[in-house]
Length: 307
Image 1: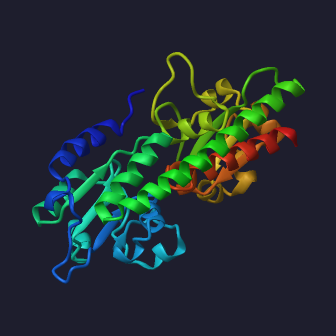
Image 2 (image 1 turned 45 degrees about the vertical axis):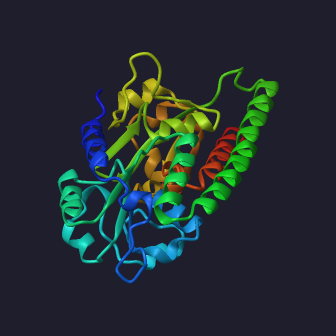
């Protein structure tokens, strides 16, 4: 199945070529000498705060939930359905967003109004996080802080990957599942009327692999992106563990609600009630909490399998 988000990404990549840093790479400033930054993307907002630039923020999108102080800022709405009026009302001097922001026409209106926009690649890899830290450091004029943050993240990443390797070695030594990594099925269930499963080329797929597991929806001929959940797909996947976001688990009625999904009772995960979850932006945002998210997911899967 074709990734339905690809046309949006392509359009935003084209827009990004037009909406790059102005002023010779220096931060765009208000007439009063202060940057007024709008951040569209929870992970980007986290990076801004991690660099000590939170005081430059004048608005964020609805995914910007961490740290808590971000929730006190004016909201410009959902990242994929922004309004030019809502953004421009904050008189920003700069807007940063990922490829998932939109619609592209609204971003073009904002640019036409004289507000520079930086569209940063989502890139669901640790290397992508380091690139975003560097870019946000450049945009906010905090290059040295970005260098320090990148160094710290690399140290945390080394610790997280070591944990994953250690757990895999212990699992193999115990011989409980041979040498196979656990099969994890990610279910996106923020809306009860639209329950999806995560295939390849998604943040969920990357996180599952980073945590030392196998995406249960993978293999030759597997689809990319997200696809509506079907009982047949669940049974065929035979996951050992079901992964959701905290928000999706709550929206679905908790563990009991998830276990009622058709086909789940015919899987190892359903029969053993192996359901794990993590806060959405931490799990899928690929922000500064990525090393923690990987270590936490690895630990949660290990605990679920040993219960």
